[in-house]
Amino acid sequence: MSETSPLIVIVSGGGPVGLTFSLNLVMMMGEKVRITIYEGRWFMDENGKVRWRDKEQGNRRRDQVVSLQDHVIDQLPKYVRRGLFKNIDERVWPKSRNIPIREVEDRLFELVQPFVETGQIQLVPERLSKEFDCIRKGSFDILVGADGLESFVRKYSNIPMISEGTENACGVAFNIPESEEVLHQALNCILTTSQTRFLVNSSFSRSGYLNIRLIESEFKELNEYIEKCKTENKPWKLPEYDDMPTTPLWTIIRQGLEYFKISPKFVTNIAPIRINVCYTSVVVREIHLSDESENKTSKTALVCLMGDAAMDVHFWSGRGMNTGMKGAIGLARNIYQSCISKNSLGENVLRLRCPFLKFLDYEGFMARLRARELQGRSLDVLIIPIDDCVIKSYFHIHLTESHAGYKKKLVEKLKKTRDALEQLPDWPHRNRPVTDDELEAVAKRLSPLAIAQLCLANPAVPRELSDVEILIEDTFPFDTRGYSPLPKLTTKTQTQTSFSDSEPLKNINGEPGSLNSSRRSSTTKRVHSHRKPSKIIAEIPVSNMQILPEINHANVPFQNAYQYYQQNVSHPPTPSHRFATPWADFYIYQ
Image (cartoon, rainbow, N blue to C red; front, side, top):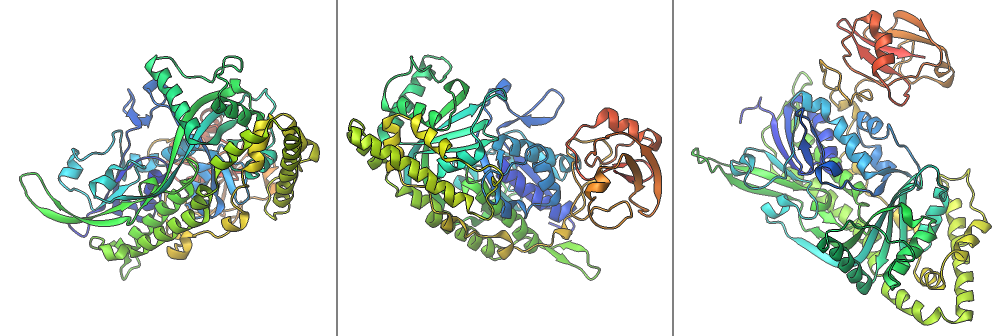
């Protein structure tokens, strides 16, 4: 392969981890990389556009809500950070933001589109397998597995998984309409961290997942019920209270919903979850490829794993996205640092292919991530005996004295958790204190059985364990000014939502920085030349005009630009935005 040829990277899996990796790599390497992403949950529509499969195409999109940690978000390119949270930006837990997985998938998919149009990234709506030409002919330099627990790439490269043990749970998806009253997120946090039987993570308390730990008999009953629904070819739905079986399984599901004041009529799905805490011993492997075509050539390439393909050590389904994104960013930076060097002119030059030894940093980084998740989180939860507290509760619920004692203990437990959380310096709900009456109301609406189980179930992992994090920048430091500019496109795309990191915001005087509140409240917009920042091109008097995000190359005459924005663009407000004409790039400011 010649020095001028781009690095060829194949990515199996177009979920959040695969898309995060691809965006980071292409924004660092620019034209020196070509990435092909394979994903079986995509399809090509009648217009030739690749999209996510939805229920119309026989696919159920994921309902979970995840908490993305600030130290992970901060390592993303500015373009990705702004685009990812342009619709939803909610703080529920300290040092993190809550966002539905579906929203993450949609926004990241949207953000890759400029690179798809330039050909730097290719999207293939199929699951990668050994029958594809790129695998048979070995036409890649790096093969990346971001394809989940049943990873094709991991199996293809003969990397085994190691299991530490299993747990059983179920996920209850819900969607509560705006017209209904919901618990405040501050109360949801307190109820979740006070015990380990139930866990809720939601978006604005309205949509998300209630996770319930189950003992083996409950898990078996749930699987049998769902299998029966499939056999009889009837859609599953949570039965009404009077029709629901009076078994321990359905009783505890009802009580879990009542604990968080979620009406059963708003349940949209329920799924059994077998939590297998497992990981691979290695995440990078050098493989020798033979071209099966007539050429009969051979080469050496690298296989790299990340996300659940490398380790599924996260106790609740969907909670491993932070670790997955860390691995994705770390691997992208490792590839960049291994393959790119500077010439005498300060330009990026692609070196010869990446040797295995250049990826020992990534191996070490993933080993530290694995140890942090296992020893600091997952194994601690696995050894908390949920079975013992469930069985013990059945012996005590009929004793009046026991019930009164458990009820008092539960309220005390909730108050202790509340006091601990509200004392945290980064508690995001300081403007919404939780009262004693609210906590006492929780015990009043639960059955004696549920109260006993919640008292006997130990609290969640202590906060001091969650303070120590493995930081990407400690192993893979990167100057964000090194990101390549966004591609210059000739047509309007749906993804131009922010400036690139190499393009700092300027105020109306052409100075670095963002606009202050007094500027944003102005009723006059100034169209300002990006290429000659000291010159004001025009002033447009308007009233309460929404500030719009960046749109590259609208390709409309300057005199029609204001009308174009009024008619064609509708996005959440940001401090400034840009559009392009055939002559120059312009910004509009308040």
